[in-house]
Image (cartoon, rainbow, N blue to C red):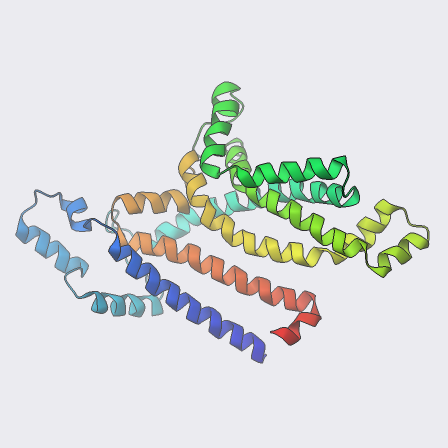
Amino acid sequence: MTALLRRVADTSLTLLLVAGLVFALIHLIPGDPVDVMLGESAHAADRAALRARLGLDQPISVQLLDYYAALAQADLGASLHQGQPVTRLLLDRLPATLQLAGAALVFALLISLPLGVVAARFAGRSPDRVASSVALIGLSIPNFWLGPVLILVFSIGLGLTPVSGDEGWGSLILPALTLGMSLAAINTRMVRASLLEVLDQPFVRTARAKGLSPIAALVRHALPNAALPVLTLLGLQLGHLLAGAVITETIFAWPGLGSLLIDAIRQRDYPLVQGCVLLISASYVVINALTDTAYGWLDPRTRRLS
């Protein structure tokens, strides 16, 4: 219970620091939201009235305290451009981002688990070299290059998928491939490394000595014991998927948090930008905390280290 309370306290403190950092960075972005809303040719009186109504005429320290006070009441403010509560806008876009992240995670698992198992089973041989080369290629290709290439080949060239937007499950294929490729590559290497470490353990050799085939010993004994590091990596990468969705959603015009964040930055919509970044950051922090907690629950040996 003490460890759990300490974890909750650490997570809460991290979220407070993240909120303050987001607030500071947003206010350092060049540009004035009043100019965006009224135009640079607006009268000085109108600009001053709008600035006072938005609270932008207050010192930064006062704005920060007001921001923390609003956060304590779960109030993220209202969008300067759309005039709607930020919370409502985030909740409208969050399901699309979670759908994309979930599809990317499924794709990564479908690719990485077979490749990692094959690489470990045939370590040092041709299948291992092929799997490692595929993983290295996946790590080397950035999302902002892979996405447009997939659009040119499968959408424009072959006409198999929609170019952009959300037009059903077909629209999810290319964004999920783009977002999940790097995760699949990293997970492949992790599965291979974990299996190679477990395959040298005495209980695997004992299983083989009792008559189990190499594949059966790998699947029934080695793979479950090698799953902990892989599960930890997946938990950490899930938060990375939410953050990495910004680029992918922009490329494919996917109606999620990423595209909402880019639009808010262009419009200098301070409350909406803060809400988007804070939600993504909070998701990453909370997922990391839950992953650490789950790791201690799955492997009791690590509880003494926490």
